[in-house]
Amino acid sequence: MSTSTKYYPAKLLLFGEYTVLHGGQALAMPFDRYVGYWRFLKEGEQAQNSLQPFFQYLQTVFSKDSLDFNAFAGDISEGLIFDSTIPWGYGAGSSGSLCAGIWDKYGREQGDIEKLRTIFAQMESFFHGKSSGIDPLVSYLNRPVLQSGNSIEVLDAMSLPKEISVFDSGISRRTAPLVDWYHREYAENPGFKQQVLDKLLPQNTKAIEAIRAKDRSTLKTAFQEISRWQKEFFAYFIPESVRGAWEQAEKEGDFFKICGAGGGGFFLVWSD
Image 1 (tube, one colour):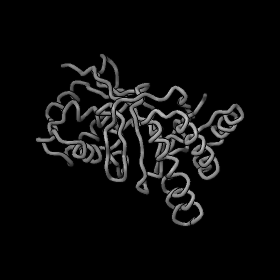
Image 2 (spheres, helix red, strand yellow):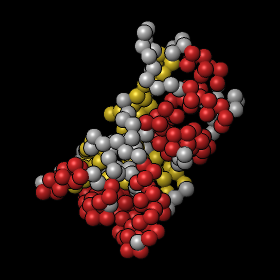
Image 3 (cartoon, helix red, strand yellow):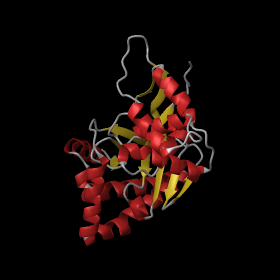
Image 4 (cartoon, one colour):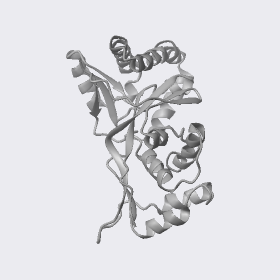
């Protein structure tokens, strides 16, 4: 009975929230401040969350040739749990980390990146109903992933630019209602739709190209433009407590932006 000492990191969506729905680019990267990992329960310890429901779901999706269900079931019976420091309801990839851990430990199939993403999308749909598979892929590879429409590219390892920090709102949220609001606004408000396509989408592309090229000046400008745009048009996604910090940052020459779906979770801050 042994456990892997491997850690499966959280993820941050740096740029591309919502515009990826219209064929724009989205850049996600590992965030190893928070991780998931396998361990066995200590004597007298009770599991906080059972793996059994997810295990049963996986049996309906994958064959024994794909996942080693016998080994997985045996380890669960011996007290295996997936522990995690990744906060739930933050859009930081808590379920993605679990999926990555299961496939890394028990997966039997080998495939290319698209095959892996399909596998992870099937796995993570247990939690979200529909998944792109990107979060587990980032965690599994421990590498940044660039999504452009339906295509993906695994990038070389990168770290956050020193000017960008992570702000913890202290608020968990559900993604589905936020995405539903966005779809309604986009469909029913022509002015909002035009703003997304003409303003937000190009700035997100510019930011991603700049961060890849390590072009600090262009990245700063794009980050600021996205921040100003989101403050005006994405007010629904900014909790009142975060709005106060956002406005205070502006007074000090710094800028906030949404990180992922918004509504809570993490936000990104540019500080010179």
